[in-house]
Length: 288
View 1 (cartoon, rainbow, N blue to C red):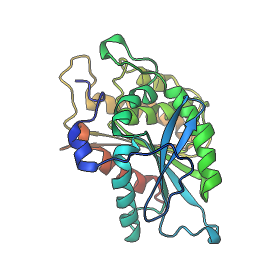
View 2: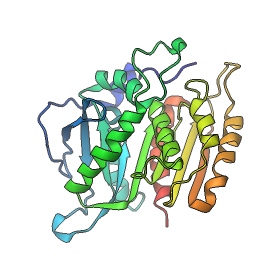
View 3: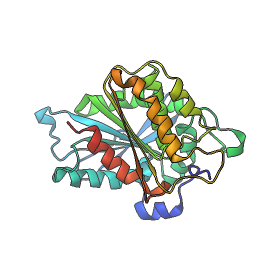
View 4: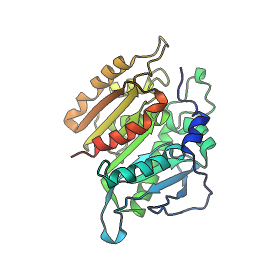
């Protein structure tokens, strides 16, 4: 079953979404995060950027904070911003600058994420109207968004995290593969919830197996799946087999500072893994 084409309407009702105008440079506050519309030269389109600042963020103190870049922000930003802020108050989450990357509205996100999160172009059987633009989307993040955030906020430029779910998880793994191949170096850690690695007959998994150049910085990679995600498709790899294949990928990078963790949440399905993965992943990535 292809599980990454569209989010159900139930999620829209459950989590809500932001709609934004094209008014540029709306600066976020800690209490009420606001969107900024940024035009991406690499993509040729505008994105909505949501920012939530830690309670301890005070510009006059010149204290810097790690930055967590969250995909599919129209769906996940509000709930993650609230959760991180509340968890940080009681010491269950690190204080971070949360940057959500989204679109004009939820329906736009639900269609254009196919364009931005995938590489290469989808095989015909997926019937995707647009696909294959992950290279351009990653260029936007590395060369346009990260410099903008670093210029605007007090960021720790040595601690950046990218996290996403489903197709967003696939893009997170694509960004990792590009880093391991020495092609992108602005991101340091990767959290992928139920990444759609079966896309294009496991194209990205094959690429990961053949990557030979490591990212020079210390890198942590956290990947999860739900135990109920095993597919009935005989062409699909089981979760146990996928776990073994991923486990074989990362040890060769261990001497270069790559640390890998893989979890299966036994009672969860594809649309259940994102929130626990994001929280547990952040706790693990930022652990001493």
